[in-house]
Image (cartoon, rainbow, N blue to C red; front, side):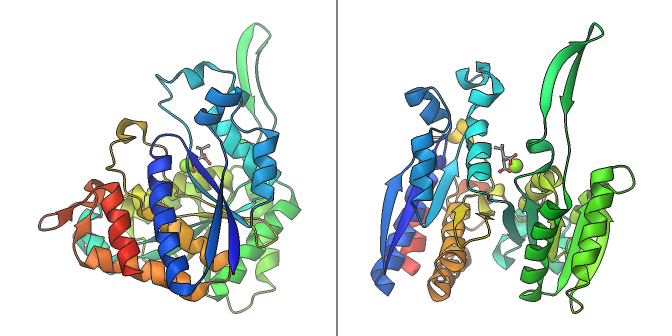
Length: 360
Ligand code: IPM
Ligand code: MG
């Protein structure tokens, strides 16, 4: 079979990590007899430099014409890069939000798993790390504060900035259904996170999630306030299975969940719509400070490619092959700098890609 993959290398470490993911995909193609055809798509700062905007209509069309999109990262140093002197809707991040919205990618899946081999890199106390954890954050991606009305203006002589947090019941229901469906294939537990003691949007969230739960009697549902969830994640992450939450809370909690897994360089992600289409990207950022040095960890992007094989192409065996190759590389003590520990062998971005591709 042949598969059309749109590739968005983006900015910072993006091109380096996407290159390694393609290397691993090509190894999979060779072994299992698939052809992956890549189309490069510009997005983020590199698109601003070329076209004056972070995502052109042509780029969206190219993404739509692909079976799936593999992305690196976008953006630069927000204090020093000239991109951040532009109006907000012209900055790199606006491209990412636009592609999420244009393609209807409302469900963002961010798995966080503590590999046995990375326990030393886990910043939590040894007894907490020893218990391990395996969670999937299901973040709503096209609603909430990210997409509500916003403005900054003088009101009664005082500069005022407004961001609007709004959710309707349909937006909540469709993401809740995704969470319960996937929980059925895991440990059958959903923890829904909100701030229902303060926010109206959270009270509606809780009500709709309870309604959806009624259709899934074999799945356990717990509600947790977001401040408590942030605390429980570092105190006792083991009980978390599927974590269902709105856009902003999911942005924050997924970085926290990534960090406790040893490094944000380990966390893959999939952004899905109602069809099989998906955009797959590491959860981490563009890390401009280490860009171009061949030292970034490509594992999150490589695992995102595995998610693409599993969710969009239904190639489970091939996805397993990538995930097992990653596990073997970690077992063999091969590490990029961010997850390095005593007695391990430190490798570059491209060497890590070679090691994983060689074990597929
Ligand atoms: C993420 C990122 C983005 C977000 C930024 C780059 C706009 O932090 O994917 O988590 O906030 O969604
Ligand atoms: Mg984020």
